[in-house]
Amino acid sequence: MNWQNDDRRKFIISSVQSVGLVATGGALLGGYVTKAKSSPLVLRPPAAINEEDFLTACVKCGLCAEACKNRDSNIDRSSGKHKEATLKIATAGDERLIGTPYFLPLEIPCFMCPDIPCVPVCPSGALDIKSVLNKKKELDINQAKMGLAVVDRESCIAYWGIQCDACYRACPLLDKAITLEYQKNERTGKHAYLLPIVHSDACTGCGLCEQACVTEKPAIFVLPLDIAKGRVGDHYVKGWDAKDQNRVKDAQILESKTGINKESALDYLNSKDEF
Amino acid sequence: MFLYFAANAYGWKIIEGTFGASVLFGKIPLADPYNIVQILATGFVVGVDVLIGGLIIIAFYALIGGRVFCSWVCPVNIVTDLANYLRRKLNLDSLETNYRFIKRNTRYWIAGIIILVSALTGVAAFEVFSPITIMQRGIIFGFGIGAAVLLAIFLFDLFGVKNGWCGHLCPLGATYSLIGSFGFIRVLHNHENCTNCMKCKIVCPENQVLHMINKESTSVTSGECTNCGRCIDVCDDNALKFELRRFIKKD
Picture 1 (tube, rainbow over the protein chains, first blue to last red):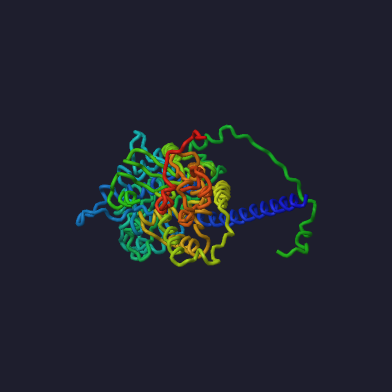
Picture 2 (picture 1 turned 90 degrees about the vertical axis):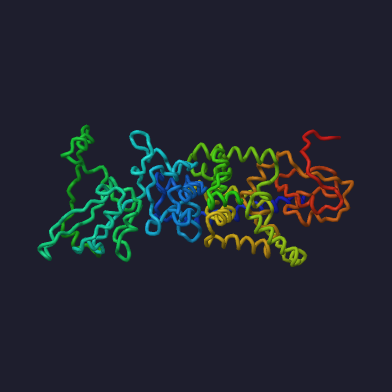
């Protein structure tokens, strides 16, 4: 009988040990993975689905980056070889989820190839080709939403009154994604400001403007859409817009009543709580 | 591996991508089944190409049998084999340095917990630090600090546990063990020729699968066998050879 008890004890101990060690490893790994995916400031290839799903979907095969590098329009005319590509594959230490594609506009922006070589090769669904098709079901890079260019007025020299339209000229959607707004320069009394204004409905986030910007650290730069944009929410309705007004067509009035506080206002002032 | 590298460097179309998913001859999709399981665990349904690719890979390795991926395809093999070679040269095996605190079946536990972590964090968890894809991407796209993982595995295999990574921990190896359990190509042992020199057991990275040496004439049936053929190479007595698995037993 004794040896049976011993066996059972050993079995229980080793089972508990295994479960414990596995749980330890799992907890460590879970922490590391959570940290590894928390890099919101990353620009993905065109047609990338939203960042959280993208991190899940991408199988890290690198086919998009290879297509980007080996495209015909990326050949260096003097050497005849392929230049370095826009799309990079994250390695450890890049502070981006390892193996996923991204680009740094300041180094190499997206050149907006009309045939979008990086998207159709994606096998996993992380790059959704439907999002870059126009109404005629043709590939249209202008549908891409990789990010949104943002202008820092303090460091943009156009806002100082100096004439600079580097970003405006660099933009592949000239006069659509960036327009110049004229304003009177009161300081000199005879000059105009030519202020770059980014339009989020047209901007694709390619980053050509960021690369073209003349300041030491670019005054115009691309941020991921989630970060660059705010959100109004459902509460506000444009009453002057018939379509928007339609949203509240069937709205009903909900009345709620709150009773008046029975306590005196002075009680509140004389309470012992410190504010 | 070279074909993968050339796909990026020279634009060759033979095989492109990485082990995560790749394309053969620009048409046939291939994909890593363990990666797919992790992604499915997060609740995301991957593209059809990847699923088909995964099935092709599973079918291929299931038919051949054993962990052929591990011994003939996996790039980390270069690192761990070097560690193993140095172990033998430095005589580290004979000293009391071979800590056996990790069991062979640890890998199955790891493979399981990674699926669970993938489901909880929403990211394919093994791919975050997988030395296999780090090594491969290193060769194709250039190394980063990720090479530290490979160094860690090298040192662990050299000074820690013999065949520590490939033989005890790697969840991808565990996956292929399960897939390869039923394949056709197997190592056959001939008990009559064996002189019990034990060279095969020294060189074998998974020597628990050679339990029949000098005991009975049978084939290696464990999926953990990598079909690397090193035992056949070192055998001086013609007691080991590859064979097509016999599913009908001779009595």
